[in-house]
Image 1 (cartoon, helix red, strand yellow):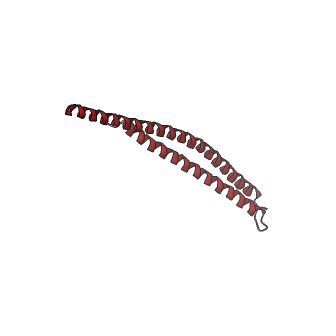
Image 2: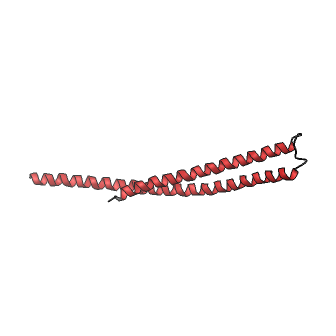
Length: 127
């Protein structure tokens, strides 16, 4: 049977993994937002270029730029949501970590008490 300390230790590991997952997802969303921003800027540069076909297809360029900016905003919104989840996961991880440390300290204290009682009992037997 697993002790409370063992269960808390596993829970600490799970909370840390969850936190890392949210941090990774947030980084991915930020990278997607940056890529969408670069796409929009590249399309705008091509639109303004002299040899551009923008005069023939202005609507197409505008739609693609708008789409890239929309992807950027969606990615930033997702990154903000993940940042909230990172904060929540961090708080939970810290709380579980404190509980684990308290349980570990309690186990060590109980072990020390048992050892002292054993020493006292052995001393009584000798007398």
